[in-house]
Image (cartoon, rainbow, N blue to C red; front, top):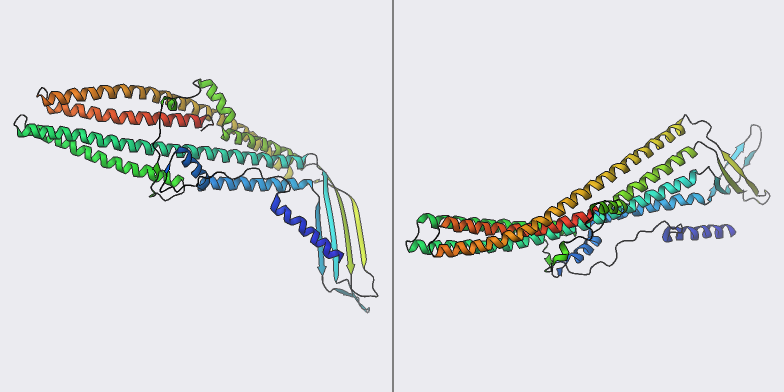
Amino acid sequence: MKKYLFLAALCSLAWPAAALDPLGAYRVRPPEGCVDKEVTTQSLNLEDLIQISLCTNPALASQYMSVKAQEAALGASRSEYLPVVTLTGVGQITGDKIEHGSYVQKEPVTGKAEASWLLFNFGGREATVRSIRLYTKAAESQYAATMHDLFLSVQTAYLNLLASQESLVSAKANLETYQRSYEEAQKRYKLGMVSLSDKLQAKTRYEQSLLTVVQHENQVKQYSGALAVLLNLRPGTDIHLKEPVFDETIIQIKNDNIDELMAQALEKRPELLAQQNTQEAAKANLTAARARLLPSFSVAASAAIGDNWRHHAPYTVNNAAGLVLQWPIFSGFANVYAAEQASYLYKQTQNQTDNIKRQIENEVWSSYQNYKTAERSYEISQTVLESAEENHRVAFRYYELGKTDILNLLSAVAQLADARQNKITAFYSLLLSKANLYRSIGEY
């Protein structure tokens, strides 16, 4: 009866270990606060889209599972600090027959419990656990980097969709402007005030503007599909965006000092944090590899019982306990080469860390320059649009009065159309440049 109680006790200990994380390895939790909205019917803002992507994007979910797997490995490594207990039970019929002797049956039932506990191995165990803990931190940082990339992708798709929608509105406004020019040319041609060439040129520009509208309609569909895929939806899903409210603060950055932005990036970029943890893990692996060249000390104990179920034959009990020394005196130089390999891998990670630092600094520098250029381009585009609008009003009035020809009018209309589109492009390019700059310094 006592044997069965002992087995039940072991099972009761094993079950919580599988369910409750007794060694405290699991830290990262899945995203919380998923937006409970019907994507196809409700209007969504950028915050809604980001939150939905956090809960549905398969690439981010895959990276999350990688973190959980690494945390499980960390839990397994921490078990090295605990004793190992093994229970073995055997039921069999065996016996020995000696020549000219009688048959002797051995115990058909045997049970054995063994326990061992590593006491000391010159820091090898600690280095192994530290290495896996650092790899786990690196996985967490990679998860954060994937999350930041997802934020940027959603924001980029969102801004591209808004820009394409505004471009479509602008293209339709340009279509109306060309239509007015065409109608005015038709009217003047019927009155004999202009030649057929004026009418045909105005018609050609009008039909070209129709083609531009069709192209922008396709662009809206393309960007809408790209955004839907980031939310793990079919590309044809209709996504309704809330009308955003933009002001001057949305295009400004909090810090305009490039040196401080670079320093901030080196502190906050999750990719660099992941690489630094990987470097420290490689250093710990080197310590563990060198420790395998040295002895280890463990305490071990065992208890065994055998019973042949016969009343006249007593059961047997064997007990043992002691200190175990293990020292790999010679292993074909495998441990020596393993230590050398760990040393080279550590030096490799050092070089990789330096390389990532330079890449991040260059990324911040390029993003900052792109932002400043986009900022200046947006300022110029506003001035150009004002000038083009005034030029169009004058040209159209002059054409009505017969003081200019159709070429000047169509040129003014084309300049106005370009100015409208350039302002839209410049504005959203500025927002995208700002988003990329923030991502380069580890923010979103």
